Image 1 (tube, helix red, strand yellow):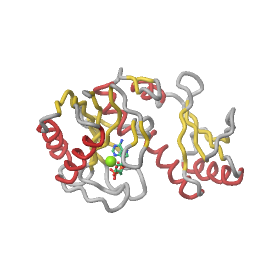
Image 2 (cartoon, rainbow, N blue to C red; image 1 turned 135 degrees about the vertical axis):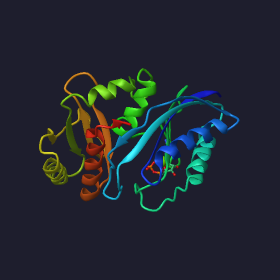
Image 3 (cartoon, rainbow, N blue to C red; image 1 turned 120 degrees about the vertical axis):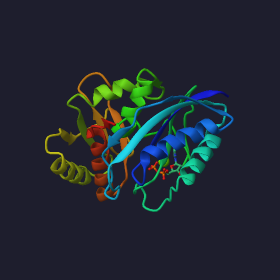
Image 4 (cartoon, rainbow, N blue to C red; image 1 turned 60 degrees about the vertical axis):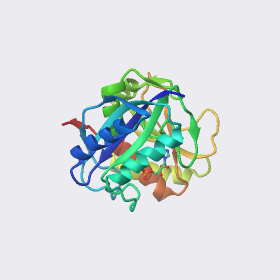
Length: 240
Ligand code: ADP
Ligand code: MG
């Protein structure tokens, strides 16, 4: 089936501007892919303890009849062609290409491919380039156009932490994250219906409904994951 896809690209090793141009050219070179739109490039902050220096990010829209996993195979081959070596998870990289979402929508959650991309809504390094080419496109499971998420990050958004099992771990995470982001409102949260996991809920008082971020079970990993998410949400990408 023919679909439009929005892809995020980024890197922070080597001549990334040239790499991004090359990646666009390689997408366009595939006989079953039509390159529809390319965003501007944005300088963004690295996220994660080992991510390295600032990144350059962009987004593209393509049209293709490739099936999702075949498209993933192709973009991973393009990453490899530009020298991507997977060593440190979230480490420095020459080129990362992620599939964000498609129209008509593909909704699935498998280890190899989760669609829509579960982290796109809070990563400013993804949203800003995406908004540049697809501000009005609705991301189906979230039910919001891309520019609604941009609007959320301009509000005084807050973070709630919920733990299904241990109030102690909930409080530990709140304390550690609040220390790191002293100006942000970070509190305990109780869902209307109990949920089975540890999670953070991010949202503004009105407008966008709260969005959930599942956190890993152990406290240090959950704390770092939430710090990374808030760092990505607080970033201000600069067009270059
Ligand atoms: P990241 O993009 O999180 O920095 P990688 O690029 O190393 O990390 O991707 C790790 C794995 O994520 C890939 O091998 C891929 O199979 C999987 N993956 C799951 N969903 C997606 C998606 N929507 N787009 C791209 N890769 C995905
Ligand atoms: Mg990737």
